[in-house]
Length: 370
Image (cartoon, rainbow, N blue to C red; front, side, top):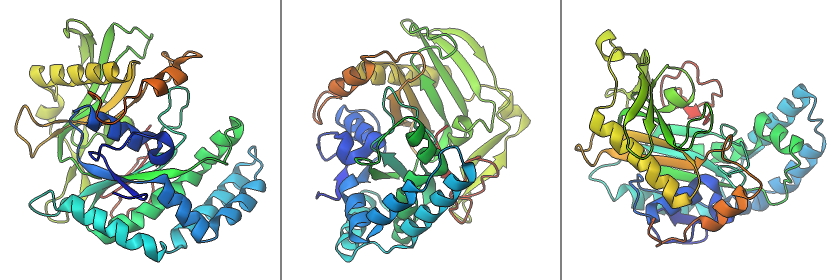
């Protein structure tokens, strides 16, 4: 709709430099007709205008020049100073109305206001040859524009987590062209959720699909806080080769009284059974295959079954990123970028404080992907 906002279904080209890795993927997958929850990206142009317009650019450059990447205390100190500076700055006046309008337009698609996820989308993440996963923040189950506006700046600030700074320094990734977009996306009321990979991560076998699934919102799976169901399928026949029923001892679900995510113990009888029916499992595997076909390389997807939608319409794709362990070769990065279709192609703790350990999740929560 403008330089600062791009809706996932706007038909915009999925530009990595404008949208960051996560949002570019969501735009591309939406254009491909995949079942992506609706939302919009606050673009890297907005972030760049914010840091330039508030004088942060030079301040950040000076602070980063002080860092010794081998001195953990130094990295942590500089990281905290930069993040505090970003979170303390007010968004420039000319941007505030644009953000509020975009949020109102998203809410207008529903009968009543819905909770959203606010998700970081850096320009150097979700790439075939990089392992940036988990270095920036995601905030879940936020309601109201004020909460979204606050956590937008927290996502911007998470570009400078200690982990992200150290990774970039040790891998000689320049700060020059680094930027951050942010996804604001309808939250899924997940009955069950998890991840799927279009190869076997144990040995790189591309003839297999592996699905990890657990009850509730999927962050307990990707964070390793629960032992999920683990199912290995044949990619061609979509038959189960092997499965392990995980303990799935806890789930993240919305509290109807507070509207926040809470961690709840799963009853013994639900722990003992697979959280996906046969039809749901096949649908997850088929969606993973579709994402792999779209990007033409092995994919690591996040999915959820929305409890508010009817069967057959409730499986949603939250993210798809290249698998980066077994499938990378010297040409993969260039091939995957070139293969990304243009749009239109057949393609917190209650306080919202960040948590990198995923421990003690009790409400709208800051999370990092693996």
